[in-house]
Length: 250
Image 1 (cartoon, rainbow, N blue to C red):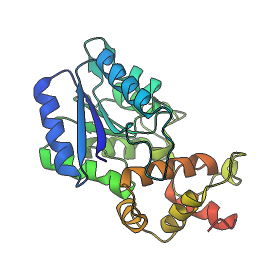
Image 2 (cartoon, one colour):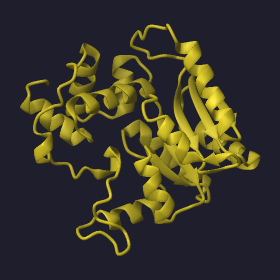
Image 3 (tube, rainbow, N blue to C red):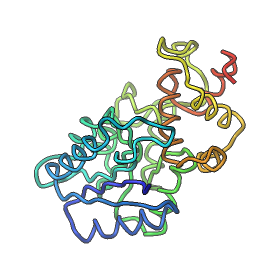
Image 4 (cartoon, rainbow, N blue to C red):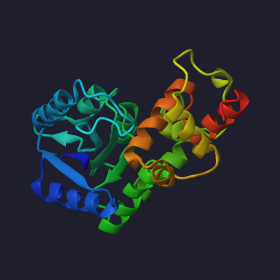
């Protein structure tokens, strides 16, 4: 079953460019859908959800749902951040693709649920390299964006940016457990499949390596990891492994 990708971009040249980036980045069989505005994107997503309704997950995930979404911020009928907020519970990796590198776009996009932030002006090779980081469990960030985030999250923050700004889980962890995360959230325990993924994570395997070992798609491994983080109330691999060891889960 091909992995479904949705590219939300109003510029047809940019859509074609991003589609080439996606195809070059992953070895999986892909099915790429395109949308030039929010209305079309919402329709594509709704159709995928309707096709997946009633399908029981069998370890390979729900095949009709999109697993990767690339969303432009400026669209003819609204802002891409609206879509990110609407998709907060949708099990996909959501990457912003934009020309804006300023704080006024970057931090709100991350707060709205973006799992990565790429600049369309970057070279083709750079975008491919960054997108491939998803397979290694890392957030895709254009070099300029990574530098901006690094500067912001250093002690004291940056002038003009409030130090109380809360970033999404993928970007706020320093690899150590905070006091409020010493115990997992009171949610359902890990499933056998999630426990297996967590065990591999604790041994240092990448997402792609785990997928090969388990015989499943790497996007499915990514879904399991997101659920593990949610159930353990953590935001990074390091936190998950430390807490899992403390709780005797691995």
